[in-house]
Length: 595
Image (cartoon, rainbow, N blue to C red; front, side, top):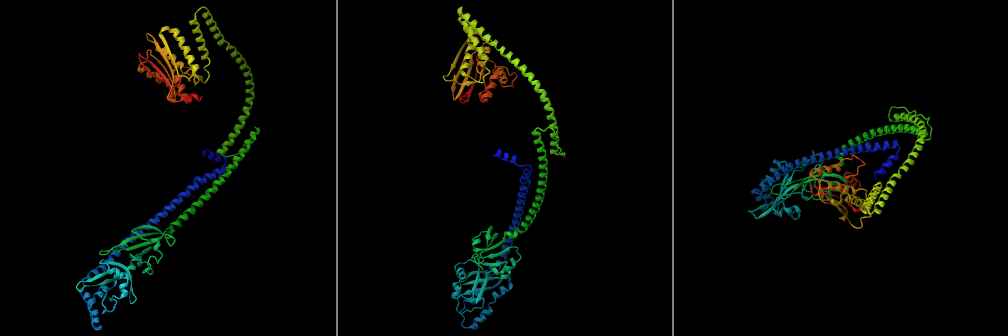
């Protein structure tokens, strides 16, 4: 993938590379950063608006709770009002008595004058002798059938709700509704304390966002827009968007527009009902200024980027033109014109390249002359090399002469009955011949072990009864290939150092076995061994840097094993002073068969 991308990049013209680089390195990052900043500014504006709305709703909740304490206090005082109880429970014989009673009961009017938070107090009572004076109202069948009357008569707690009222006694505002028990008369009625709508709306008029107060039935009891009072959330088209909202902040789609809604609840003592304070605002209206600033900033950025793009294109065009002129000079040079001269001026890289081109043309002219002279010298050297090869071929006669002489000595010894001597001479010749063939990269284990066997036979002839050896090779290993002279140096080391300062017979065991999917090669002797210090010195030596590339020894064997098969196949040496030395290495079979 990366190679294909690099190949396509290399195929682009320089001016196109500069423009693409400008877009990727400058244009796109700046656009991304600008978008992020605009988004961050927009979010900050929204967060500030939500925070302001939350604070305003909290303030309204406190103000509403304070205002609701007034009708609650009035209702508590009227529960024990004997005058009210007597007035509503008396059966009046005529209108004169009723009028006198109404005129003497002034508590409702007094509360209305004392408290601006309420617009009036009413009591609904089932007494057919009563008449409606907008304060004391008979409980007609229509009144008894109303939901607010039935809810009040069904509980002892205080109810807060929007009450429509009757056509002849309209209410149309938030009211405290509660049941009044007259224990002395064994009767009950419904007390209604009506809130002052202007006072409720006045709390909301200064709010920056659309704000309203609703009862538990979804009626708007107060609003910044007074026309919304008395309508339900469904009628305003907000019911499906709001649903049942708990206290908190919500992100909603209202009338097809993304909006934020902040909700808080108002609950008073002696009441299970809650009023909801709701503030909502359109997201678009809040972030419009932020969007304008963002668009202005993006416009300025785009203008700057456009000017920069024109500048980059101009520079790339001028650079490409100068490179094209230099390319044409190179084409003339490639056609063999050594008189071409580049006249591109400037001190930048292209100008330097132009001057270097002229220097190169001069150098080529000089080299052409030198080549002619060198060709004549090479012809003379070839003649001399041919003479050297003839001498080298003649020198190859010497090894053959040596092998023929050894064979003559062996035959002469054999004819004279010196069979052991003849065998040793044969082994020596075989060993020398194989040493001359070690230039091959790999040999079979069979050939390597023949060399080892020849070497041990010669050494046993030399040391007579002091040296014994054993060769153990698993069947089927002879055809595998290994590097030449990889086992014989180990055997030679065992013979040379094992017999040092060791009396008696020294036995050398050479084992080639297969175990755990690897070839195990082990050369073990019971010779003089090495001390721990000497062993550490040898281990450090074989792993050290190469000092003599022509040396064939333990270090040579170890380093060739590591280079050929890996670190795990390196030479391992164990030795106990006075008891002997063991050298081994392991090679995975798949590495041997793959060669």
